[in-house]
Length: 636
Image (cartoon, rainbow, N blue to C red; front, side, top):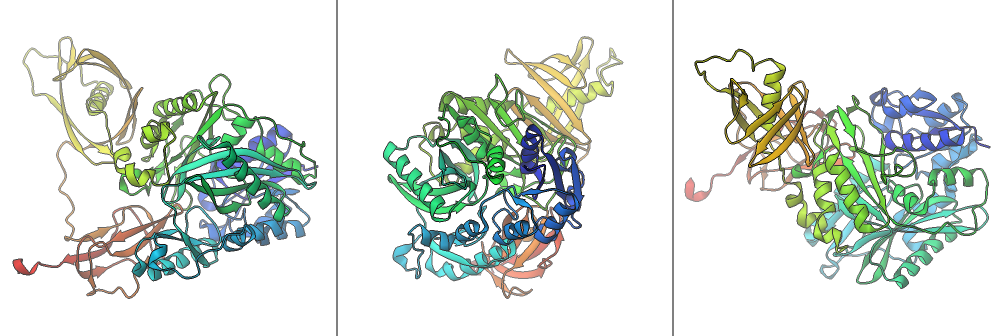
C-alpha cells in the first residue's frame, strides 16, 4: 500500500493530486524551485523539498534530483502529473530502479508512444517523407513532448526549410530532442480524444470522448465531454482504436488517445501517456476520480470489468494570465484575488452548483515568467450541454480575477459564440474570431465609479461651499488596451454629481449610478495605482494616472520593444547591424511561460541597432532592435 506520494510537478496538478491523496489518507510531498518557494502547492503539501534554481531545466526536469528527493523525504511513490517528466521513460525507469512505486504507465509504453513518429507507425499511420506543392498545407511537429511546442503550419513550400529548422531548435530546447516530422495539415477538423484507463490484468476502459477543438497556438482553451454531434459508428471506431493503442503497448494507468476528426473520418494524432489537463470533464460525467484510479492501478488492484455509465455534460475553460488581443502574450505580476462564485475545490463540482475550480494559485501569489501562464481551470457540469455551457459562461462572467490581464472575457464570449453553442466549431475557430472575441470592452462608466470611490475614500466630498468651484478631474488608463480617460465630477449640497448620470450612492468600495434610468452597481477595489471595477457583467482594470500627463519617453522610429517579459531564445540567422530586412520578417524570438513569441520587422529597411542576445532576460518594453524604414524611391 502506498503511504506517501511525491508529485514531480508543480501548480494546479500538484494541488489536484494532493487533494485525492488526502481523501485516501496518503501523505504528500512537494518539490519546488526557488521561483515556487511560496507557491500554493508547497503550502498544501505535508512535506516540501527545494530543488535549487528557477528554470525548469535546473529543477523540475532533473529526474535524478527528484528521485533523490523522494528517497530523502521517505516517499514510497512518485506521481508525475502532466508536463515536465510525465512522459519521460528514463525517469520512469529511474523511479522503479530506486524501489519506488511509479504512478504511471510502464516505461516501455511511454517509450512506444513518446515519439509521435513511432506511435504513428504502431497505429498504422505514415508521416510524409517528402513534401511537394500538392501536399500543402502541412504541419511540422516535434516527435517528443506536446503543448504545441515545435509545431508549425506551412503553406508555402519555400518556407518549409526555415520552419523545420525553427521547429528543431524549439523542440530541442523544450524537450531535449530535436526530432521533428511532417504530416498533412487537415483544416476544418475537430480535435477529439478518448480517455483510457487500464490495469495489469487486461482490462481497458474507454471513458467516453472529449472535444478539445478550441485551441490557441495549438494549445487547448476549452474542452468538453462527451464530444458533441459525433455519429455512433464514429464513436465506436474512436473507442476501438483507443483500445488498440492501449493493448499494443500493454498500457497501464491513465492515458489519452487523440484524433483529428474531419468529414466523418478520424485521423490518429498521438497518445499522451499521462493524465491530461482536461481530465476533470471526464471525471464529472463518469463520477470518477482518475487520480485515485491511477493510484489503485499502481498498487496492483484490478479495475471493474466495466466503468460506470456516463451522465450529463461537462465543459472546462482554462483561465490564462495572457492578453489575447496582443497575440496571446503571457502576463506576469501579483494575483490579488481569484474567486469563482459557487465553485467547489474537490474532484467533483460543488454540490448544488455544478462548478469546480482547479488552481495552483491563491490571492497574493506572484505569476512569474518561468512556467505555463494557466491560472486555473473552471469546470461546469449539468444534465445537458446547453445548460453546462450557460453555467460555465455565467460563472466566468461573475468571477473576480484581480491582477494581471487574463483571457476571462474571451472565454465568456467563446462559450456564447453561435458556432460553439451549436457545436459547429473547428480548429480554425480562433483564427477566424480571436480578434473579435479578444477586443477589449471596458465598462464606459468604470473610470467614473473609480474616481467617485477614490474621492470618497479621501474625504473629498466634504466642505460644500455656496460658491461653485471647478469640477474635480481624475485620469485613468484602461488595461490592457491603454486607452486614457479623463473623468469629471462635482459635489453639491446633496452629494456628488457627474454629467449624464445620477449618483445614487458612494462608499470607498461601492458606487451606485443611474444611467438612462437603469440602476447600476459597481464594486471598486484598489491595489496601489491599479483599480478593478467589477459589475455583474465583468471586470474593468484601470491604472490611475497623474493629474498632468507625463511626457512620453522618446524612442527612435522603428524601435522593436519586448511585448512581454521573457528570455531571448533566438535571433534570426546572420542578423547583424546594417543588415537589410523586410517588413514582417521575424528578427527575434522571445520565450516566456512555455510560449514562444516572434518579434518581426515593422517595415522593410535597415537594422540600425540590435540589442537582443540569446539567453538575455528582458522586461516588457525593453529595446530589442531598431529598424530604419526604407524611403520609397518616389519620396527620395
